[in-house]
Length: 240
Image (tube, rainbow, N blue to C red; front, side, top):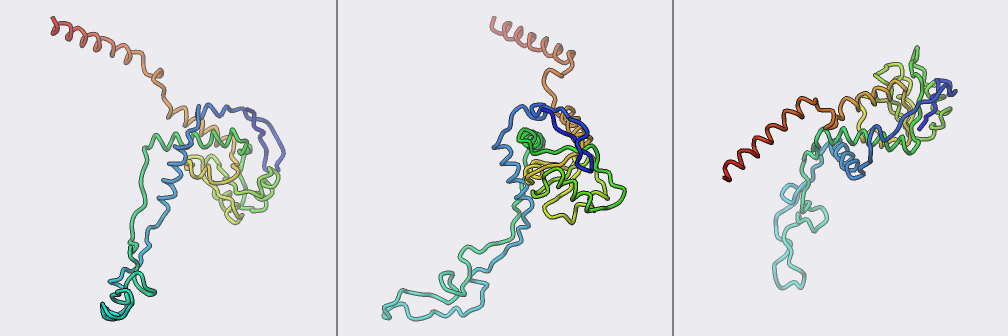
């Protein structure tokens, strides 16, 4: 597929060819779901706490005698079934965080970007270099690209302080270098704006991390065959 490349003024200056299958041959929705749940769980502070019946204020005296009143039997006022009583299953601070295998998260990141490319939700610009912080420049660029009304992720090749200062006051816009992207940061916004240098860096990292069995050295493959033959020979000798 060919993606249009724009400049800072929103004018098309070229095209960029990329195949989403190069990043991920297939998209595993369950893996993406698991990765997003992990990132969201790790964002939870887990500082919630409520009081049990032993911690709320109130008397422990029995409200009325057990029998003879015609009412249901009742204990103290701090019971969880009464207004002002404690929580029956009181919440306590806890850590909701957990981790997934590193290679699974890397695969999820590649699948997320491949899915956004296939859905035509990525816009490319030749450069996002700004001489000085200028919010109006970034705001005008997003409007020219047709993504100004959506939540947007701006992904340069590396951190740019001027770009970050220019976009931080725009509602719904976040800036993250391509090296810090993950499945959650890619799937969260409606649109993505990347530089050509950033997507080149992402493709280079994919080629470096994804290694097929065919890429193993031929010497390593040849060395494994005599070992297998020797084991078969030992089995034959023992059988005799």
